[in-house]
Length: 399
Image 1: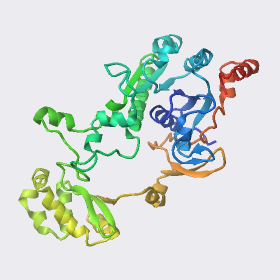
Image 2 (image 1 turned 90 degrees about the vertical axis):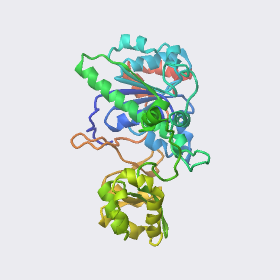
Image 3 (image 1 turned 180 degrees about the horizontal axis):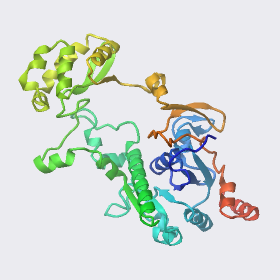
Image 4 (image 1 turned 180 degrees about the vertical axis):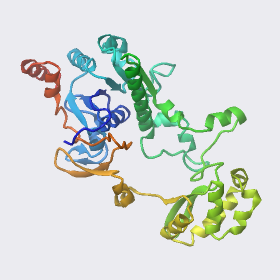
């Protein structure tokens, strides 16, 4: 276990969620130094333990999502389990949950109840559609939030089936924006007398918040942006271009960058064309410009294209696979790839900690826990004696 230098050292988080959105937010706070106690159901635990590629029965994804956490196995379907969760919540600074709205209330854990016993409690609630509104009770996953938030409509090729990003981006966007809300609430609590509050984070709203100009363009002009493949509509040139051995992304949309790009590919005529001096003019001739760039890139390998454009100070990059990421010296130099040893002895690379703070950096202090690994010690800290803990185990309420 490494020393906790994070800015959230001393903050206690109770995580009552599963899979991605809630746990990703708690992971983010844990990386920054918070003590995270994760409640899991006995026997099976968080379903993420069984998602995707498993090593000796446990997902290697688990090693990222649950690092810096303590696992307490409590059956929340039973009243005694709910009472234990309540007691843990009133000892916490932050409660994170991503159940359907109304679930905590059915367990007697409404914010009104909890805040009476813990006025400083900050509660982050992540759900598909939020705690209010006509859709609040519908089930919602990240993919549905991506669709309702407008992202899925933009992905893929024009006229074809919209495609997903390939990651649960709706969940992680909600987790990150929810974490921002938690940090703002912590600051406000410190500044204004210690009162907590609720952060209501909907998956679709987290996605919608990142959709840039979609709404104002529709509101002002009735414009509905659609999928555009690898291009960025209205920003020219910004696209993927074919090389001898794959594709490169080139972002030459700044006026001076565009001119350097055209000179680098031997098209002084396009660099000097007054019609193409601004993005407005270039966007009217996007196909012509893209054809000129493609005619140059497809004669060269990726490495040569990147070297030429780097020399010309034009933003460009290859499309990385995870192998490319793992092999890249910049990732390693920035400590964006760290190595951990799992509970069953597997050595595995995981993403490093961000954001990077200069004086109080976050860290990976301990590996992801076994199911119920910390049940006994956490409940003892809560004041339960061994006899009571053993009785709860015998009844199947804890593990």
